Image (cartoon, rainbow, N blue to C red):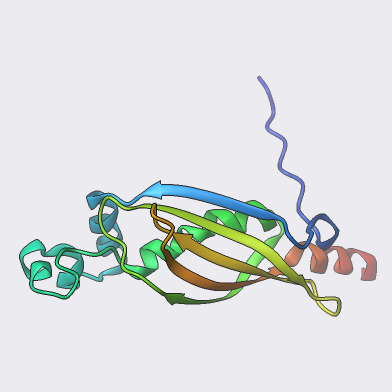
Length: 153
């Protein structure tokens, strides 16, 4: 039997400006329905094809937060274990339709010197290059606080 070793916690020294991670996923009808079920957001623009035809979009759109959530893989790949999300700020720039392929990305753009906090630029692009999510994420590196507690105790 083999033992799975836990991944070493990432620390501020492991993170560098310009580090980047990406994740690509095609949004499916089941993704939209599952997200609606998880969140309780059954807005007709997401789940009712006939209604959606009468909107300016002409068809159903994926939830903005479903699309934005794809960046979580990227932020986690860069900062975990050892980091936790403090804040996300983003704009929804373009609709995402069922069948669109989205590439999410996160890039470390700032490391605070006074606190164990990093800022990441986050984006989601559609298959044609259109930006649909654009913003920032703030991550607190709890691994640093744990190390401080070990030194103090």
